[in-house]
Image 1 (cartoon, rainbow, N blue to C red):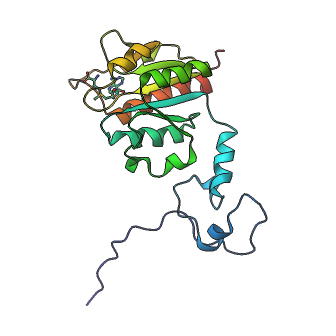
Image 2: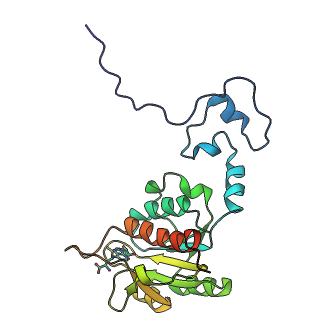
Image 3: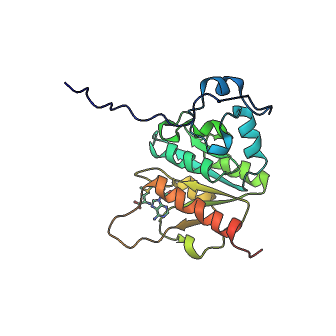
Length: 211
Ligand SMILES: C[S@@+](CC[C@H](N)C(=O)[O-])C[C@H]1O[C@@H](n2cnc3c(N)ncnc32)[C@H](O)[C@@H]1O
């Protein structure tokens, strides 16, 4: 009789370090010994968590990401994961302090998390930091993200499934930007919208040569 196939997923990451250990104080002896199965890019394999955060800190972008959290929206985690991928300056949770971390896949631990009780608190903080606040939603009066010249220093605010951006948040935004749609659905998933908006910032300020 043949053995049943092994249905376990293959291990991700790398196993214990083979051979003589490197001398680099950014490396974690425990990871070198046990292997590194974390969700990090290959260049950070075996690095201490704090060393990774310090390295990211040295090259974070100037845009911030904020999400309204009134209903424990499961999309928030996905937004926060993308904020990590594009190395946002920080992410901001507006409303309830506890948020649904599941989709973040632990990426939040490599970022700086801020909490604001409401839209006014976020706006006050952003103003003090010299950051323009832009809502991202397809609402009456919103303007097309595709042709809008996003400033380098800004906060991109996302709403949640169902209601979208709250009225108070809209009132605090310099403008609300929409992603053009061509189909029949009212909106795209908030996580997908956040990825498009962050990438618009990256295209404008990392790849575009205009000042
Ligand atoms: C379900 S949508 C909000 C509802 C939408 N305003 C409506 O009229 O049905 C949830 C969030 O996803 C984002 N989003 C979805 N589609 C978008 C689009 N086409 N442009 C910009 N943001 C969008 C926004 O941040 C929005 O607050």
